[in-house]
Image 1 (tube, rainbow, N blue to C red):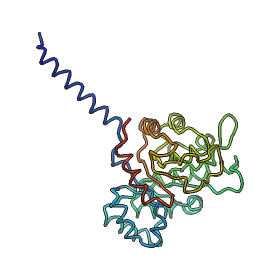
Image 2: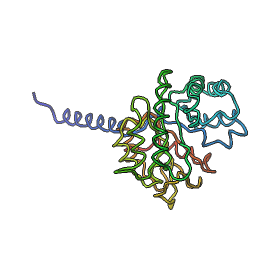
Image 3: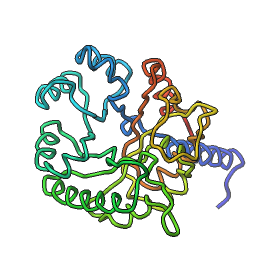
Image 4: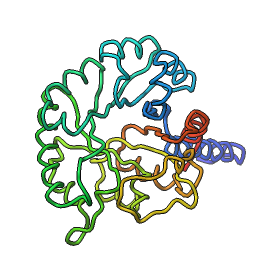
Length: 287
């Protein structure tokens, strides 16, 4: 069958357009996967919970991650979220609650409608060590199994201090190996991977689907790295897409790993100005 030059050119143009559309879809981040860690507006929440949630909605968010309910009960906070169409997909609770009151965590999480329950800090005196790491792994395994019975997923949020050298790797590797993949997931905080001098892309590729969530934040140019303190001046947080972290390869690796939610966190005094910039970057960036 002969094809005219015009028909052939149309077929090529159609194929090219299809390729461009599918490539764009493959290299973009759906708004439904983007959220805000409400701790970014902690000072505002202390003064005015309803007004601050109005601001979160006005920014354009639907998904949020919690770090407390700012003197409201879980029931009261859920009502405030529902009134604005905000969905709490995840929340952070203190390590001690996972160790001593995991059923209480499950109760609060179910009221709030969470899918994921996380821990963002393992208490330790001085440098993080093997003993503390193994103790935490045991707490996380038990908590994860208990939460799973309620339909909830547990995760640990990286904070930088876990990358103390250990054998052929780090204590973070030990934490990964000692926790049960069936019950313990992880949230990569990109800032707290770069801060201790680690490579987010390498870790995403290495541990794949164990990364269920991601905290995205920018790091100011000149911020010291290679540190294992788990602390940094909050003014070192800048809008995502600015500063010294190149997010394009990270987002590409995160998609491959199967990250479910990308949570903007901005602890800086300029968070109200920077959050919309971060959200715009995540909505428009392509790779």
